[in-house]
Length: 160
Image (cartoon, rainbow, N blue to C red; front, side, top):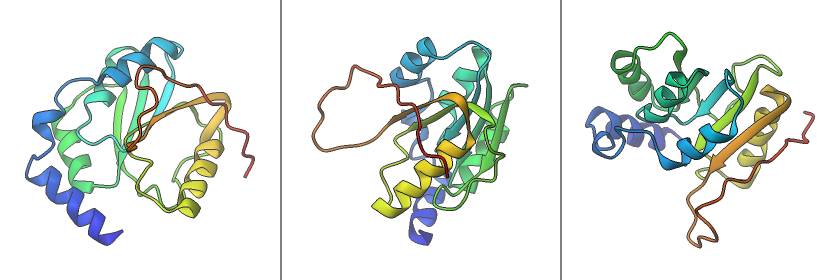
C-alpha cells in the first residue's frame, strides 16, 4: 500500500487529476437524485472533492475521506462549505468512525484496488458505520461493462 500512497500523493501534488475532476460526476448526480434530503454521507476516496462539494451544496453533511493526505490537504484549502469535512482514511484499515453513524456511504472508483480479503473487510466496515436502513452507493472500474446507466441500491446485511 505504501507504493499506492506515494502514487496518489504524487498524482494530487502534481495536479494530474485536477483537469479531469473539477465538476460533479454523472454518478454523483444520479445518486443525489436517490438519497434523502439532509443525509449524512461518508465518501470513501473523495479524490479532488468535486462530488463531495456537490453533495454538501445540496443539503447533505459530508465527511469526505481519501487515502492521500495530499488530496485531503488540498481539498481543505480548495473547498469551503459548512457541511463539508475532509479526513485522511486508509480504507484497508478499520474506519475511525462510530457504529451506525452515516445514512449513506458513497464510493466512486475507490473500492477496486484491494484483495478479496481486504475488500470483504472494507464492506464489513461500511456495514458497521451505516445506520439501520442506510445505503451504499459505489461504482468500480471493470473491464467488462454490463451497464453504466443504472445505480443499484444495496442494503448491507453484514453485522460485524
